[in-house]
Image 1 (tube, one colour):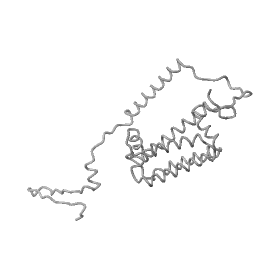
Image 2 (tube, rainbow, N blue to C red):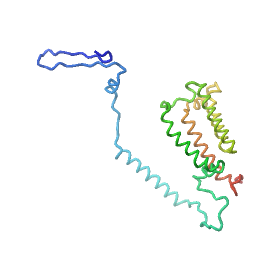
Image 3 (cartoon, rainbow, N blue to C red):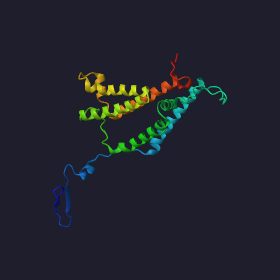
Image 4 (cartoon, helix red, strand yellow):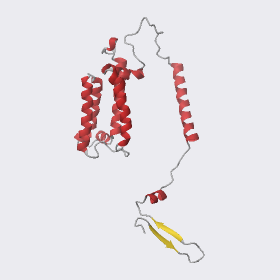
Amino acid sequence: MNRDVKEEVVMSVNPQEVPRRIALFPQKTPVRFEIEKPEEKLVMTFPDLIIREVICFQVVVIVCAILALFFNAPLEELANPQNTPNPAKAPWYFLGLQELLHNFPPVVAGVLIPLLIVLALVVIPYFNINVKREGLWVRDKKRTLLLFSSATFLFIFASLIYSAYSIAIPTFIIYCLALLPLLIKRQTRFINWLSKRSLAEWIMSWFAILATVLTIIGTYFRGPGWSWVWPW
């Protein structure tokens, strides 16, 4: 008899009945887990999800239509190939990329950085994913500090080589904020909130802040020849 699964045959009083077999499973047996797993509430993709998405889409269209009735789009005059603006700026949602192309060579900004992003998306699933969204400094603080600091300062150093201060400065600020729960022992509401942020949240915050800073600089602080100008 297998020690992991105990079986017992129970004979009925009536000899004509078929003997019943009872299986006793230990606590860690996967079969027991499947048997005792509570049923989850499932919904169908259609109509439950699709109808909600259609409603949200209609609300967005209605809001955009109302805004278009009361506010004119900020369009310029017709394009004239003999009189091109200086600088020729992309739409606002591409100005961050245009600012990135100004800081780095086209091969780096257009090929190397997207390639590194794609490789990161391929490699990330093979690492230990923080499913519980634990704070950055919950486990092995020394090893985390070494890896986190090495990656951050390597990125800052690479940015300073190309004089990309608009990338290096926000990266250093995010690094200092992530280090505050480790350096400050006094527990405040702000420090507690920072200490609960996971690595994924810090990376996403860094990406969002960096994209916002690059877009603002490209919109308001770039003039003729993509030189630095003040908005006023």
